[in-house]
Image 1 (cartoon, rainbow, N blue to C red):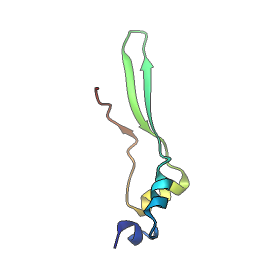
Image 2 (tube, rainbow, N blue to C red):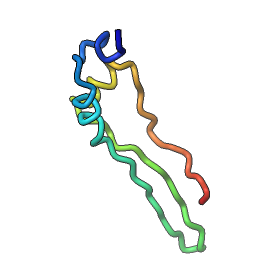
Image 3 (tube, rainbow, N blue to C red):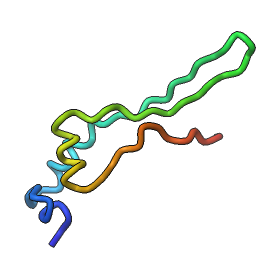
Image 4 (cartoon, helix red, strand yellow):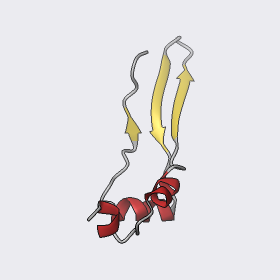
Length: 70
């Protein structure tokens, strides 16, 4: 039995992915007067529906992610 079925989310994974696809990742870049650039990668707060999906799948979103150098 799949995790989504055990969580009571049905047999259509596409709907689950569509529901979670709107969670966004935002890179905040703030230049300072001293010339240093502050960078923070943030994840949007899930909607109530998304929060329910995440809870039922036993997943947690981090509040932020590490920035990687390119």
